[in-house]
Length: 254
Image 1 (cartoon, helix red, strand yellow):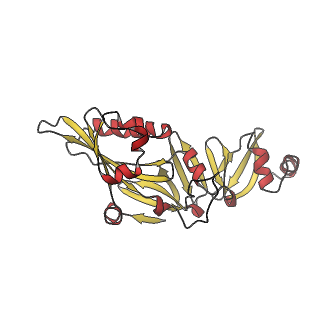
Image 2: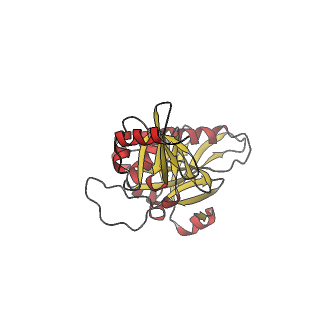
Image 3: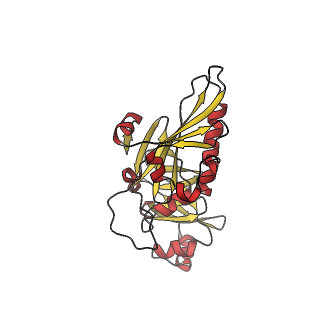
């Protein structure tokens, strides 16, 4: 894993800045924000900042704004979040602005494009798969970004709009949804076996049936359910068939 301090990010990357008024409407942005965000398509000025984010990211951005708005301390720390937009992964920090009477007057949204940081060197890809693969998964720990090597990941578990990243060292929190991660991880290494679970195929050490449901046993002894629709594909990728899997389980000693 790589531990990167906010100071390192400030020194390493150009920064995108978006200014919002108290009603969360976009009033201004710098040149980098204009370059990275779909300004021409969305025409975001004088409309809610929520509206020009991808639909899957809107609840996250709204939550971040809500948290910044209600933070009870007089000098709240910036809220931190990672979101996925087409072709890019952005680390976003948001802070509330207030006047002399501490009334909210607006927000400043600052972001860093960390795509190159989390994407490894990759061969050209065809037009059917234009998203860059993630060699590292960005997670948030306090005010630090921790990059987890994809090879170290045992299993990913959905937590609503976010994802829990499980490694032999423990669990970490990723702002990207499980759907975002599924689209960006190497499909030859990772497989979504359930709507809430992605597993690293190399971390599977066994199969079992519990209450009639197929489960995979992972390094670390975690057991993860396999959906009925995913089971045939999983067994095929493991060089097994449903019949062989069932027979193996029946013959397994207690």
